[in-house]
Image (tube, rainbow, N blue to C red):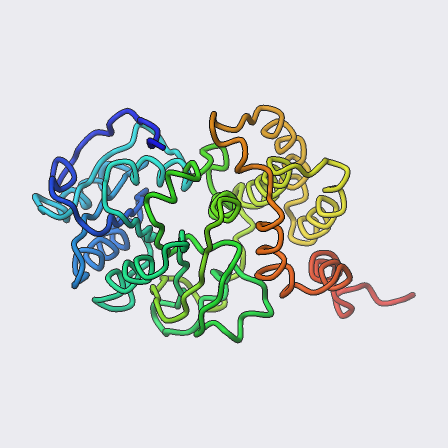
Length: 349
C-alpha cells in the first residue's frame, strides 16, 4: 500500500532530500520553539552509531529567532534535513508528514525534549524490529534526563506493569517520546489519524497494527532520556484534557463502540476533570468526539482494520486488560481517586 502523498514542505537547511541509497532508519523530530532542547535532540540523533540513518526535523511554527537557531545547528549537514511544514499539524499529522519524507525501513520518533540514552540506541532498536517479522513497533523506556529515574509522566502502560519497567513485554500501545516503527507496517496500517492532533494517536495506530496480526512490544532495555521532572503530573492547562477525552472517546467509536456504552467512561472523565479544574474541557470533548466519529470514514481498502478480530481482542485482553484489574478497580482509579480526599473536605458542623 502506497503512503499518502503530502505537499512538499519548505526546505530550510541540511540535505535537500533523503539518501539515494538504501539505509536503515529515519529519525523524526518535530519542532516548535524549544530551540535549545531541539538542537540537543538532533545532535543526539546524529551521533548514533552502528546504523545508517537520516534525521528529519519538521518545524511546525517556531518563531523566527528559534527557527534561526535550528537552521544554524543543522547547517549543511549531509545526514539531517530541516523542513518547515505549512502549518502546525500536531503530533499525529506532523509525524505523518515527516515520516513520508524518508525511506528507511525503520522510523524512530524522538520528542524534541528527549535524547537517546546511548550511542547505539537507534541501532539496537532497528535490530529489535529486524529480529521479529511480526513486530510492528517498539516503545522505549522513558527516563528522566537529569536523573536516569523512571519518567512516571510517560508511563503509558497498565500501572501494574510499572515494576517491570526494565523488562520487555507485548503491549497495546507505545509511548510517543521515543519509539521505533517498521515503515512497512506504519504504511499498511494507514499512519496516524490527523484528526487526533495529539494524544492517543499511538494507541489508535497500534489497534490497527494489532488487528492486522502484528505485535507492539515495550523494550525496557532500549531507552531515551526525557527532560521533565520525575514527579511531573499531567498538564491540565490549555486544551490537553479536551484532546485526552475527545480522542479516547472518538477512538472507541471508530472501532465500533456505541455512545451509550461509553457513558460510564465519559462520566469518569468528568469527575476527574472537575477535580482538576478543567470540567469545561471535558464537557466539550463529548460532542466533539461525536462529530469526529460521524465524519470518520475508513480509507478505501482499510475498512477491515477498524473491525477488531477475535485474535486482536485476545491479544488486547492478554497484554492490556489482564493487567488493569476488574471493573471496580477501574472505577476506583478513574472516579474515586479523582474526588477530594478526606482531609480536604470541610469539617462537619
